[in-house]
Image (tube, rainbow, N blue to C red; front, side, top):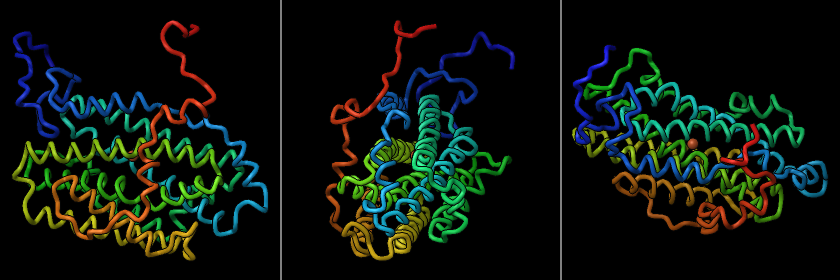
Length: 344
Ligand code: FE
């Protein structure tokens, strides 16, 4: 493209999440979607790496025959089996499908950060599997063998198909709705619901003082994921504002139905993966928790609540509100080298 020396600065009112101007360069200012920049800064402030967390205790407990029950071992493995697929699906969705259609430079900045975080999460699972000497192919292939995992992945992958098509372009009513549907399912269901039974079980391990290194990794992952979800919700709400015609009654009903389907799949996953319940959480507890968070996801984008359930696991909010000051620096084993400290 030839340089146009007479081009005017970008008009902030033409900035849009999709179908905006200036998708070809990262012209960050004037900045419109400040939520994206703020989330980008939070992501950087939360930076962590799996190898900074000691796995010594976990290795001892995993090798010992007296710490974990068979059910707990199976639950631990299956959770990793799901997580390994979830974060790689997330990364692919962002990099191969979502990113190229986003025309807001600041949203793209956060998506780059988010994609890296998804890689860090997959690294964390690899690190746990390797540290504990687990059967790698068993864990990483589990989605092909455990139907409840496959079904969750399948819901997201089947809805992705349209926007993964190399010929897919935003700019028509139908395609823009298709794109918005993808981010709704990706954010509200995949990142907002499908991780959460597993998170709850991992924090129960932590509360019992079992597998503390793995649980700590998952805690950092959950902190990142809650930012991914925030960002996704903000992006959905920004698109709604910029293109209100997309948010039809029929579209809203479709998203509510997909969230409800996600709730069923997550409940089925929880009851097949933890058939006898685990750490005192039974099927009823999982259902109530999943329904409670589903309502919060719906409300976050202005859709009506469906379940009206109280949070049966109030300790989960504490785990989510993990602050870096609380324990991050006590447990990390390395510090980042910054600025003048770098040894070239
Ligand atoms: Fe994520």
